[in-house]
Length: 237
Image 1 (cartoon, rainbow, N blue to C red):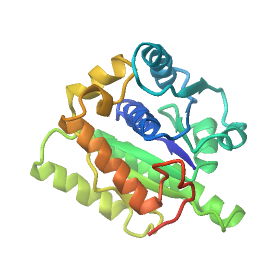
Image 2: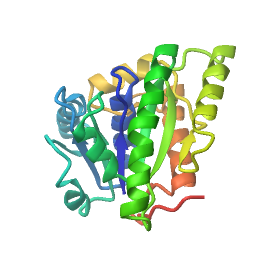
Image 3: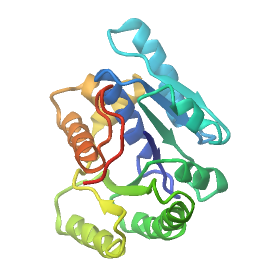
Image 4: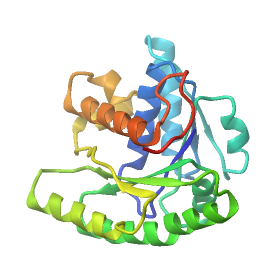
């Protein structure tokens, strides 16, 4: 399965989400490939720190690479249980190609009004176009997308308002969902990243680790994302 994190605005935390998925799934015995398509190489930097951490601690290593384009990713993905792609924070050809080769696209939405405006463009100009292209080119392999509310600061009325706006935005889209699993703005995410870890390894009993577990459980149930080496097919419920 290939999962891509895509958004046209920097700062929503997509690299943090994708690296935490990588760490948690690897800890469950999955063969994980982490691909960074962003010239800033944030995910790749984490991957290099991960290699050092794996040499010093009892944690699984993760294969991470930087590529300038996604063309060879489907071939590489055949040797892994799951492939996770981090893209650049802009609407460019590389991001659009990465979305097109994926089974699932995660769109991180940082808590805030300006970020919602950029989300609208990502959904309308990247995700919907990719879904239509897939329906025409590979109707037997539908493309799905999930919006993840990230860096949530409170359970306020404004959070409910942004969720309502998201639901209205995708009301006509059967293949785009607003996920129930929110991730808050927590120091554990920063601390884990700086050590090449996932939050489940960094502070397994804290709230951030619980958020990532809830997200993985939702992705597994909704999209049958593999969470062990024995499951490997996408099926929508």
